[in-house]
Amino acid sequence: MSKRDYYEVLGVSRQASAEEIKKAYRKLARQYHPDANPTNKKEAEERFKEIAEAYEVLSDPEKKANYDRFGHAGVNGQGFGGFEGFGGFGSDFGGLGDIFDMFFGGGGRRRRGPEKGSDIRVDMEISFEEAAFGLEKDIKVPRIEECGTCGGTGASPGTRPQTCSACNGSGQVQYTQSTPFGRIVQARTCERCRGSGKIIEKPCPTCHGTGQVKKTRSIHVKVPAGVDSGTRLRVAGEGEAGLRGGPRGDLYVYVYVKPHKFFRREGNDVIVEVPLSFAQAALGDEIEVETLDGKARVKIPEGTQSGTVFRLRGRGIPDLHGYGRGDQLVHVKVVTPTRLTEKQKALLREFANLGNENPAGSDRGFFGRVRDAFMG
Image (cartoon, rainbow, N blue to C red; front, top):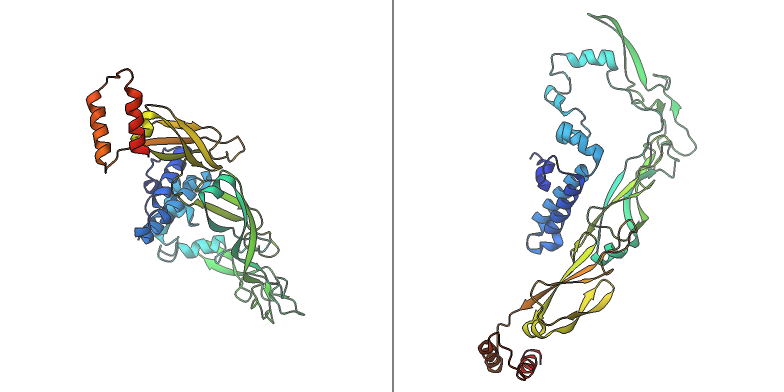
């Protein structure tokens, strides 16, 4: 099954800015997070992975440029995807593959110097509060490491790899071939040492001659305060082991924030919805609301309308770059009672009969009775 266009996955145009791409990703990540779709978790997981993959490419300027130019082939290590239809200039293209082999080295030139190890990606799921305030934790990472038995040589302890006699350690052998273009010297990968330039007579019993083994390591990761879903953390030098003495790759931790049961995030602000009774909204009250720092009290003035927003300054998410904290926005929603006692109904009828009038000396007593009836 072919992959969908990454822009289509995120629902943005090809001219979308980095901020628009990030905003679209955050919205979809919250919508399709598996924890937010308990009745359809498997399908949500697949959609979530597709969204994360699209964002990983489109949020990286270099990967995005390759994708815009070559499509999926440009980010899958296939380079110029347009050549695939011709078999990569292989034998299906009228023998041109052989001619290219003659001019450009046939079996290919293998790097014989040190090579940096591959990077590793790990997904980390954290709570809303952990994202807000940061955390430090150890995570288990399976990775390729240098074999401790042979020190990465691939040879059994007490022995050493020997220089290949077929290629004299170059990893390549040369052939001279007559062609319509004249005599051409052609270089191919040495079959005896497979391009390594070394022969291991007695392979290491632990790594079987590869010089590397698979191990699971515990890596300490610091997650800064203010991260959000899609944040990528780089832990330098904790990726796969390099080849022939090359440095390790890096570890990239992709953060995913679990949805909160009543908080939601908009930028660095925290949004929470609080229900109010009719009596509280009409008569005013002082209520207690949850915040990231514990409980806080909010004064509700008389006549508060449903949808009114109260701001608690500095009670939101710390800025990822250290520029203070956002606010908590308390959205109040007036709840209409569904089951009324006869006394409550009588009071509401009395209220309706009063209309917009405010008879002197009677309003306090009436609203006092409303408060008693609806608030106990």
